[in-house]
Image 1: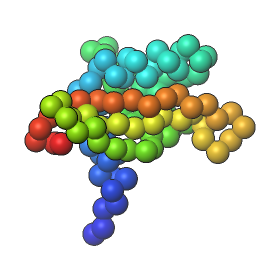
Image 2: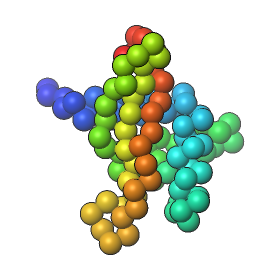
Image 3: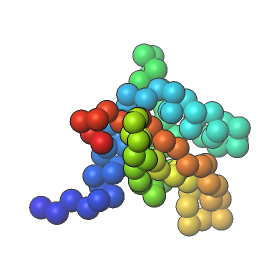
Length: 99
């Protein structure tokens, strides 16, 4: 079985986002400011529904290496359509065991 780097990056991102409420809130806030639906729906305990809204694409995965390693990625709304909106680049901290 072959797993691509993108698939590994997406799995790491989704696992990390599930534990990064601040980043989830930041992404959803930017979407609200742009009059777009939220990327992540939150349940009563404010735990995000991962993977969230299928109109969004996560891409450009990378690592920011330092004393506090981070996973970086871009979020786009409806890429490849006339409704495309770039949401932005985000980083989430990852533990040393996942870096």
